[in-house]
Length: 209
Ligand code: HEC
Image 1 (cartoon, rainbow, N blue to C red):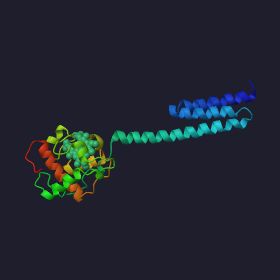
Image 2 (image 1 turned 120 degrees about the vertical axis):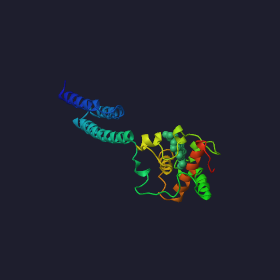
Image 3 (image 1 turned 90 degrees about the vertical axis):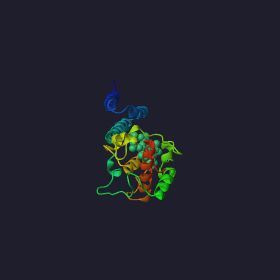
Image 4 (image 1 turned 120 degrees about the horizontal axis):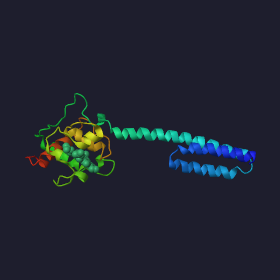
């Protein structure tokens, strides 16, 4: 074995060890780099340098990518923060959670319920929850008056129970893929007042819709 071949063997061995702990996709990319380097190594030794550099670069990119993936995984496992969807401290809502909200407020809430411009994905609340009074997409927990426990609010935001406005915010942020509505805004207030009546209808109780 020539000195040249020996050096090549060692370098490729090192490259392989590095590849052994990279993800399969990156191993494929690195494999391409190794092939390229092998093809260019025929004349001079400098042909090896890119192999080593390329593999080190790939290894460090990979380490970075793994770090990012881990961070993302953790965020997902823990769910989002409730900060954006929970009532701010000392907040007092502009609607009544037991009902008796002004008719105009309910009318405005209904309008917003059909408004696809609230989301970033073309959906309105009605896309999932039904139009013309056919209430869809709710679980049995919705039969209880607010505040109550909701699986999605718990699993995604760690909230043990939610008020109507908090549930509106949960659906704004999660399924509607939008920013939460501003606390105290007429949108949030009207939509929440409307959902209080929808809750009563869903529970088979007298309501103002
Ligand atoms: C992509 C579908 C989707 C869209 C769009 C959507 N939601 Fe929801 N919503 C759900 C799902 C799924 C649940 C059931 C969550 C659960 O019970 O765990 C739910 C539950 C609810 C509940 C009842 C939870 C309870 O038991 O109290 C309310 C209130 C609600 N959504 C309001 C809204 C409002 C208001 C909008 C529009 C701003 C909206 N949703 C948009 C999917 C959606």
